[in-house]
Image (cartoon, rainbow, N blue to C red; front, side):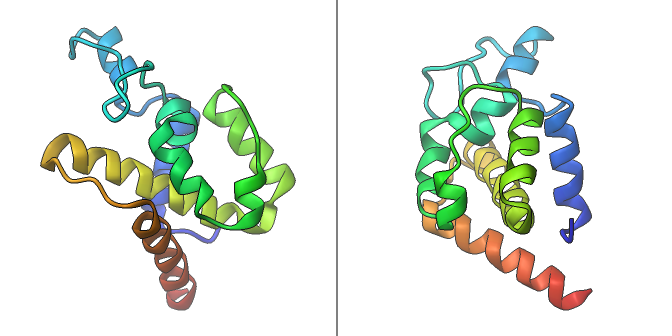
Length: 136
């Protein structure tokens, strides 16, 4: 993938379920609740935080048509990524960059109480991919 190393690392950690989601932190008795930071209705697993939460579905709805049409229900993030590779290989960089921005948006809410609009998340992701391709 032609994406920054920070994005690759996040994708790798997501595939190995090693992101500090509330579900993972709850298992380690670090937080009191496994519920999603944003929607507060479902446990915040990696796949929930990056794929199925209502707050990320609005972003997926505003991105490219091919990524918008991808329907993969509750599976592991690794399975979701494998599906994206098999269906939309030419858009994997965009997918990864958007996922990275989801995680940044989630952390911004947790630590700074800021939450970016869906259009801005997509815009930042596309710009990051373009900047990286220009630099390489």
